[in-house]
Length: 277
Image (cartoon, rainbow, N blue to C red; front, side, top):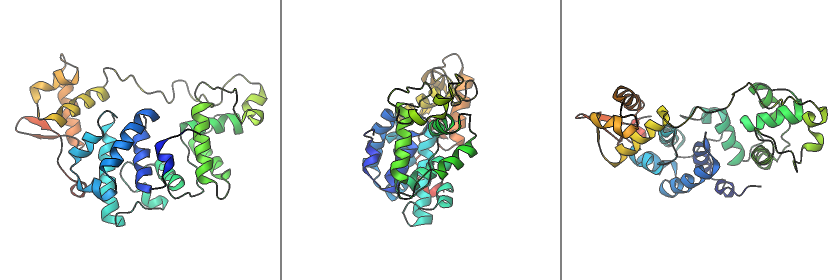
């Protein structure tokens, strides 16, 4: 089993932070920010009280800053609607900003040790190969995953599947040493077509270099250090020949609450979570 820092806790807030950090991010990068974030914001209340600017600053280097904004707002709702404690029912978790089916179930399984199935792309791939020998829909994978969680095993069961997806049943499978190999429906069938591959190109992220995502990160990083005037956006974003694109991206971030505009410059926001809930 991989030694990941969030596996040493059952604290629901820390588990929620970990799941936000891990969304669309490599585990190694997520672990660095996870530790820093939990040290700075030890509870939903401490996060909710902090200006969004401080939350974004701690999030620096992880990218997808919208996640930090959602986590900040989620902390505010936890304080305002749940007396400062992360809720332990699926509907309440799903109602938090930025929390989808996977994250909600991960909190239930890894913080509250509920016997629910946590299904991401990797787990869906495992089930498509090992159990079904055909590509499963999200709903089919979730239904099957729920059926195979034995009572009292939710935490260990889900961690094992996630490790299996990372170490063996990845996009390019490493079947050597896989504990499921003897019973794997795909391997036993002898069929070459990979049922876990999904549609061509599925699950692949678009190129990062030169993307809006890269420009957003650069603009926000600069704004965290001080106001950024409109004329500076193109150079700071990495698009010196496309000022219109840089301004569009900055305005989109302002609409999302990740930047504030005033006196001709964009700045990191100073709002607290209660003001944005």
